[in-house]
Image (cartoon, rainbow, N blue to C red):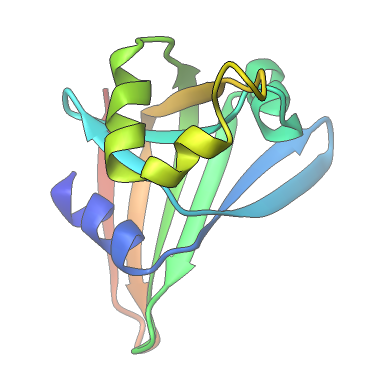
Length: 134
């Protein structure tokens, strides 16, 4: 778990993909959290990405470093409304308070990887698969 989080943080932004029916959508994300042994991602509840995850909980995340190593995380997500997550997100990225507050009316939503895999790969064909179940 720690290795996955560290790679995502070190290679931010990472790219988060959702689907809406048959169409895939990818966007850059920068915040990943670990809480109670789970990997969490966050986005505004008003955004299409959050709405897509409510309907289609499968997602994929991908990023690469400058030396030709990359990480792909994919699987099923589960939305979590625990208020401690917002506190953790604001501690890690205080600038989020400017976007998600009572004045803007925007709320921060969270999804964790409930079941899936993390694949560490490199340009020479190296491959390691880690199964994730929360």
